[in-house]
Length: 356
Image 1 (tube, rainbow, N blue to C red):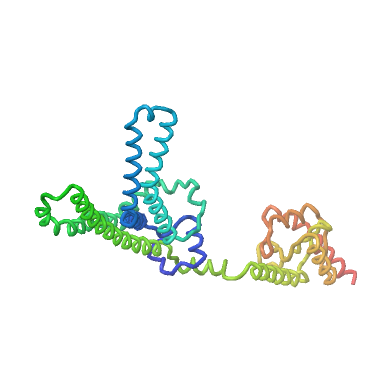
Image 2 (cartoon, helix red, strand yellow):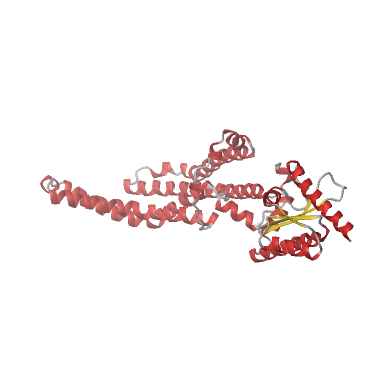
């Protein structure tokens, strides 16, 4: 179906089905940029404490290593491993935990917390070369190319803007202590990283806006799809069931109203009943009513009340009931059998007229 025909906004049901299949607007760039910004903020806020705790742990580890006798014993090795794990948790744990929480929050903020197992099912259409080539060579390729160039260019530009103003001041820092020089370079590095991270965040927001726009375009429906979905889901299941029952009742009433005009009713004799009419305007007799069990009983009752001949013929009744719908002419292979029944009925009617 051509995309030009998709001019209607998606219905809530259509959105729900797409979501259940894992089709959502999500930007990996936005998630990654949020993680980077959160990590930098965590380093800025917890950095001094992490450095102090880490330095203390490293001094403790180096102190243990300085005594080979203790370090090589079982108790010493256990204490050394414990100190190393503590150092790792102190230095890496807070930042890693912050980044993990930020990634989860960024994902939930984009698509909501509605996990689905549908995306885990194998789908060979995802590895279809034709679909993949279409995605690569379509409008998405242009945007992805521009985004990659912009990401590198903008991040580099913001980093340069943070770095260049401080280059002229480096000459005045000759002779400062190593600790002061370390603090200076740490501040400059933090400034560059923050400028680059926020530039990356801006690119992520633009990427998410594009992904959302593209997702909305893919979800659009044709007018016919909207009509079909409205008919299918526009009313409750109870109302649809009531409508079906009403339609069946009307159809049965029309069928029973045609029984008095039938020429013959072929029966099983109790389980099936098929009413036939042949007026000469059609090439073959027509089924005007059929049914089994209670419906067949009602057809026979109406036929008796209106003096319509009832002919027991179980094989023919079953065959007509199974192969022909109401309003259709009988199949060609049943012409001979039905002709015999009609001939019998017409002879019987002729005898009655002569007798009267």
